[in-house]
Amino acid sequence: MFHGADKAVEALLRGQESATRLKTVLEHQMRSSVSIEPLFDTVLDSFSFALSLFTSPDTQPHRESSQSKATPVTARKSPKKNRHGEEGLEQYIHDSPIPHQNDRFTWRKYGQKAIKTSSHQRCYYRCAYSKDRNCKATKRVQQIQDSPSSVYRTTYIGKHICEVNAFLQLNDDINNGSKMIRFDTVDQAMPELVMPQLAPVEQQAIAIEEDTDQITNLEFDINDFLVDDDDQLWAYQFPPFSPGNFMFLDDISGFDYNPSHV
DNA sequence: CTGATTTGACCACA
DNA sequence: TGTGGTCAAATCAG
Image (cartoon, rainbow, N blue to C red):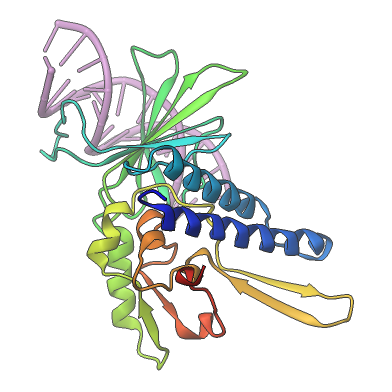
């Protein structure tokens, strides 16, 4: 096997788990309000991630699907300082047929400009919490290919500080007796916070009425799988959706997932 | 009324 | 000096 095989296996397991959930949702679709699109995306992303490990085991894989692709750009040819003198900010490019909007973060448009090399205008967005939480993350969206096969390029620049700040604030506010698990430190999670997320499956509560009149409550979150302290693959590759990197023990009671057993 | 978007002007860099 | 990125006032929408 190659370096990263364990990660590939985990990705495949993750895809399998999402497919199973998708099946459950589809079987009860008529009575469920849960969106299945995030689950589709999760399945596709998981398999794409695993495949990328097989095809380029020695490099940090980037996620790619039939509909879109995302490419981290860590080294700019000539890091251009912005007007505040910051340079070398991490970039992440995401190409898709539609503008990449469902990326968990809240953006505020602050500019739009015609670009000389393109017939389409470029839109500039910054984190909606840029002022409140001093978050410097920005993104640019530009159509780089005309219809019918139009392609929108979303370039994420900088790291989201807002979630960390929100987490710290939340930590101060938490005074109840709930037990938490920290998956990693804030600093460890930080480098990837700007990256596009796996299908942003928000905390969804499904109330599915079974044929047997049995009520089953399925409450899940992608991050519920980030329980392996020894291998922080998913915490690194797919940062959590909730502020900070913690979850309540109540959420994972009965959880029985251990990749090392596979 | 408030928050979000638009848009022309300004600024920094190559 | 041209180009791309950001600012901020004006405008729009809920």
